[in-house]
Image (cartoon, rainbow over the protein chains, first blue to last red):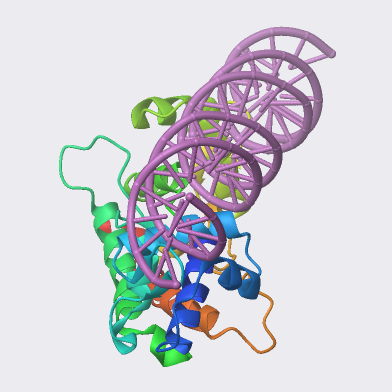
Length: 126
Length: 126
DNA sequence: ATAATTAAAGACAAATACAGTCCGTATTAT
DNA sequence: ATAATACGGACTGTATTTGTCTTTAATTAT
């Protein structure tokens, strides 16, 4: 179990947006060049961030991407969820009669991690 | 990112050992039948648990598997680590000049989860 | 010693997920 | 109309996970 590379990229991309907030829209090519990610793959990730309402996009000349919300309120969790989705990390595979206690503990543990990721904002680290 | 099925199995297997501690060795076939996992695949998982010193194995007639340690001290983390390994969930992929602050936060978060998994023992839930 | 019973190891195969590319389409400013 | 930009879907390659099969090694009972 590891975080995907896409999540890794997404966090760095969002950090870049937070750091450069207020300036002109950032378009794909310069952004990709600056972050050293292939433009086509990066496009996929950006589209996911748009769908999650973390950034907005504009087509056409002078288009590009920009933050959708105040830069101070975006949590690590927001970004991670945009890429990894919101399913639990652990789901019991056995067919048991009663509620699986293993699953319960595993979800408690996940919640500790998630709470930390909800508390921490991208703005905290730029 | 999800926990692997093997980890799922391993936790249930260990719960079974803790629950039935003290009785005769459990051999592969009955264990696999009882848990409804394919014997050959289960064998792989059991071998990993042996390597991690959570259980011990004995070949030959009346052989099989049994707990290696007192049943009350085995944590969820012990079992998970035996299967998933001990690498961090997140490792920064970008080449940055200074230490990656994103990675730092991600590891803090992981640590919260891990601490909970270290506190919780399989014995707590059987 | 031999046979029976059990686990371990390694090679393989299938399925799934992840990473990345390519190409055509839609949108917008000038 | 044209140029610049993002979006969408199909596709490919690779890595990981899940699972099987076969052989080997170890242990015990007779």
